[in-house]
Amino acid sequence: MFKKILVAEDIDAIKKGIAPVWDALGIVDVTYSAYCDDALLKAKRALYDKVPFELLLCDLSFIPDHRNVKLQSGEELIAAIKKEQPDLKIIVYSYIDHPQTIKPLWEGNDIDGYVWKDRKGSVQLVTCIQEVYKGQRYLSPKLSAVLRKSNMIVLGDYETRLLQYLENGLTQDEIQQRFETEGVLPSSKSSIEKRLKELKDEFNAKTPLHLVTILRNLRLL
Amino acid sequence: MFKKILVAEDIDAIKKGIAPVWDALGIVDVTYSAYCDDALLKAKRALYDKVPFELLLCDLSFIPDHRNVKLQSGEELIAAIKKEQPDLKIIVYSYIDHPQTIKPLWEGNDIDGYVWKDRKGSVQLVTCIQEVYKGQRYLSPKLSAVLRKSNMIVLGDYETRLLQYLENGLTQDEIQQRFETEGVLPSSKSSIEKRLKELKDEFNAKTPLHLVTILRNLRLL
DNA sequence: CAATACCTTACGGATTTCCGTAAAAAAGGA
DNA sequence: TCCTTTTTTACGGAAATCCGTAAGGTATTG
Image (cartoon, rainbow over all chains, first blue to last red; front, top):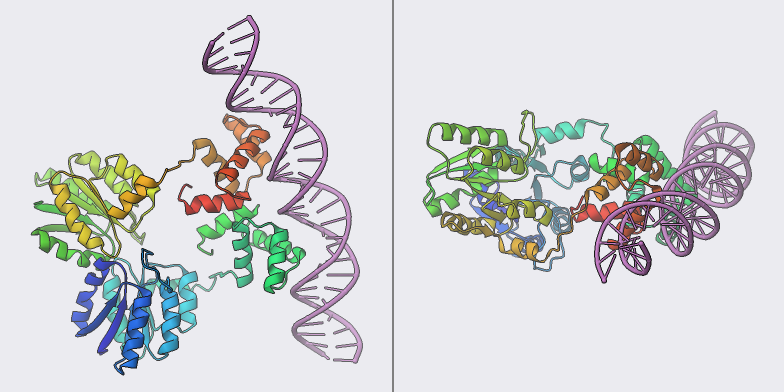
């Protein structure tokens, strides 16, 4: 079993709540961080000291507080820590169940496990850690079902950016200019109009506001 | 100290994580429910058996799953349980920190305490329970600061309805017709335009979509 | 009752979005 | 390479919005 693991989790109750998991698995050397920056620092230090962590268990959402932090989310922590220690096993333990969040992590092979923080989450966590230790990947049953459903529409980068700009109050003209300076293609107003119309048609939306409302409800945005 | 308490919380890790709180306070009789409906049922049963709970600690968000439930949120549970047992002390333990959510609960005197599920949440929880036992009310410091300074704008009925129609993709013409048939005044297109402009000015929004985005972020919608 | 302020409505022009058509450019196939 | 298909862009008119102005209504106050 893993000997030395790192936990990045900000809610203290959860930190205490998963202690039984370590007992069940016989893991003694558990280090906690309530901040992503802190977790990264500890991982780097352990690596430098030649006693690296073997597993990172982390949340995705971290509440911002008075501390100035560079890494604001679990995703950023994962990306940063992978650069330092590419072979580190990573398990996410989060209550986020949106395919849009999970899919890039899971299919990008950034993580070895994803456990859904639900009513039975900490039970699954034990299984997950065991599987990952054996070299397998593990995804909570409910979530793997969600991901399997291949009708999982994910908005492209272009569409997401376009809609974000609209949400921020830019006119189509302004978006065109932005796209030009940013080198986003296609950048013409015609294309912007066309993509927007395609999206509206696809989701049966009558106006951009209607479209965004629908996409938000579908958690696609 | 309280002798018999009820906890409504769906995340199992948190359920385990707050166990030290009961130890610290010497509370032995703790009943857990992972569903609001179940919690209400247990409270009613205890009342019927003449051994009522003295305190309810509950979360606000509950993950929907296969179970068919009537009460979908902590707010609904609180409202329902108050009807059965008006003198029951209630403490909310949630990571929700939006004034719009907290204010109605707090100022409506529906609850005796609200603890923010943050990095130090379970420490505050101990204090909170002690205060509530002494007959005081308790609010996490950060949240009471938020409540004090937030000038808490609440949108009127008219504005809410107008924005809802816009979100549903209606044009201003269609909204005017709807208002006429529904007897909502003022119903003229001019007035609709004017209110919308006023809202946009008030919140520094450039477009209706921008406005709705801002209001959603402020949890005013 | 009159004067005032405020709200509602009507209207018109400027701006923006919407939508179809068609040309230009790029990508793909034989 | 040449041809076809797809994508991007340009353009123009229709529709919707945005915004200021002004007229009509209602309530308030002295």
